[in-house]
Amino acid sequence: MSANISFVMTGAETEDDIPLGERKTVTDFCYLLDKSKQLFNGLRDLPQYGHKQWQSYFGRTFDVYTKLWKFQQQHRQVLDSRYGLKRWQIGEVASKIGQLYYHYYLRTSETSYLNEAFSFYSAIRQRSYYFQVNKEDRPELVVKKLRYYARYIVVCLLLNKMDLVKVLVKELSEEIEDYTQRFNTEDQLEWNLVLQEVAAFIEADPVVVLNDNNSVVTISNRLQEGSVPPLEQGMVVGQLILADALIIGNCNNQVKFSELTIDMFRMLQALEREPVNLATQTSKQGTMEPNEKPAKRENPHKYLLYKPTFSQLFTFLSASFKELPANSVLLIYLSATGVFPTGHSDYEGPYDFGGVLTNTNRDVVNGETVQKRNQAQKEMHCLHPGDLFPFTRKPLFVIVDSSNSTAYKNFTNLFGQPLVCLLSPTVYPKSVQDQSQRGSLFTLFLYSPLLAFSSVCGLNSVQRGLWERAQEFLRKVYRDIGQMLTRSRTIDQAFLQFFGDEFLRLLLIRFVFCSAALRLHKLFRESQSFPESYPELPKQDTVESSLLQKHILELATMLDVQSLFWDDSLEAY
Image (cartoon, rainbow, N blue to C red; front, top):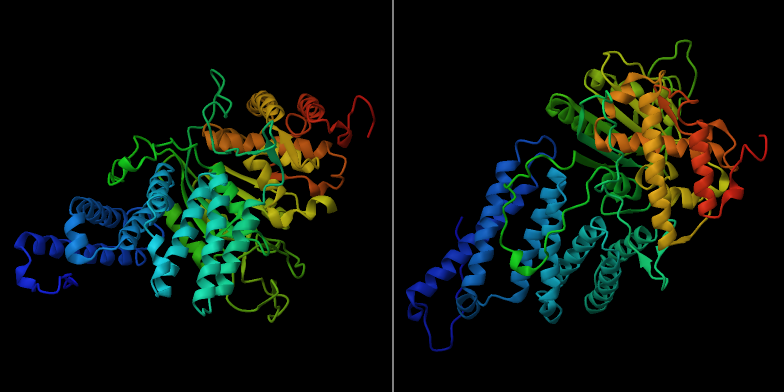
């Protein structure tokens, strides 16, 4: 590929007057620039699934960008005078490096790469690399700047840098206004939609934690040291490790930003450890060594699938299943609109209870699937429980958050491997239902039980000191729930098989807490308003345990909402 070389010359100069060394510098720079673009564009042709194929390609791309970044730093003066290097071009290279790190995070689930993406994105803003773009009469350059902002916002959201997100949204809003006024563009509506989506995303948390001066405190809900109850000495639990997770979002009308629904965003963080906060000084840049593998994988590998079709979902599921290491677990999280069966047949099998929606490119009117087929046939655009049966040949942990989650109670463990399904309530009281656009209550409990508990009690804000006391109290509750599960004589062994993994242990404990809290809440009257599981948990030992009920009432008293809960010692119900 020939490098596109152009020299900047003063009036009396010819190309031959330029010293050979300087000419070579420009030639080398153009070669690296071309090579980097070529490799970067090739990234989109890599398969999205499977762990192996893409790693060496990413490595090569990082190498070229490392060289390019260092080269422009070392030879800036020559490149300025002889090539006419503009600041926005340096910004573009930094932006691509940020994108590379972000995509590397998506591929590996290692949050340290998010910090690297953040450090490049923040340098672009601090050094005003894109500042001059607005003076040039080229709308395509302004679009690059807007896209940079949108990507920077996604990374900040994932790192919970909410104060910065608000500043960036304000800046992006001004940039969009300036762009649409200067250029008569057709994409104005699209950019305004981006702003609306991110604004809704920021407002999605139903409860805020406040400092003494009433400013909002950002709370991270990733796994932290000490947040998982340790295993008791001598406790016999499985040695399985959560290696892979498919996070699927296919809810109609849920808040989303950049192909992440709020439920996906929450579950993704529930499956990650708190990132090691790498220094974000700019001196750190140019040290792109994503090949330095952490000694052991910190987080399970994740695929994020926004509104996948059945075939996409099945392809990713098969790839994940195929590459699952020995003694590992595959987790499938489904946050999706329910699909209900159309008729009853004499024999009820795994395809007769409906399931959850998969995406279709046709036949959808206002989110409702048009029934053109014979009513007796099965819904095609639906993930039925039976579709997951082949994957139960390996340990499988399923979470279904849907109005038809109970379809997955009709599961059969055909291969005797550990299998657990956690299923959301299918009906919520009216006051809770109104919140569903801002994310499901069930997923909120799995992500942050205290946030969900406060929300279901109608609190809009909690003071920081009280929040921290309540969190401390919850740690004790989690320890007790852990002991209930491991000491129960009648519990299905599948639960204990998964209990050795910290992420799965915490999800199981939060599930029990959610079930117990909703059972005591006065608004939750119907049995469909309680979560269920396959296999069933022994209720007396877990979700209806008197010790756990006592804890929930203590927490309610701490938050001054005890009147919303049934208190067995005061009233018979």
